[in-house]
Length: 79
Image (cartoon, rainbow, N blue to C red; front, side, top):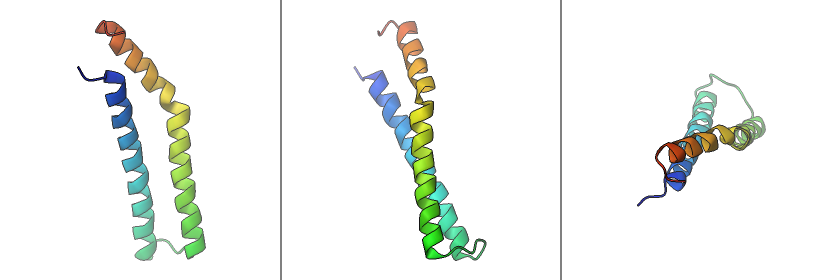
């Protein structure tokens, strides 16, 4: 039997990682196409800030996912 909590946790982490990567990729693309005009130093700072902010949001907001997992496990009598 699969571990529901582990599976959901990994899926959420994958989604957040993909979101962070896509945001950073879009910023780099915009900067390369002159839609943005950032220096390399500003670009690197912005990318680090985005990655840190997305990670922080995951940590601070994950309690809702944990509550949902507990509710599902209880409903399915898996706890």
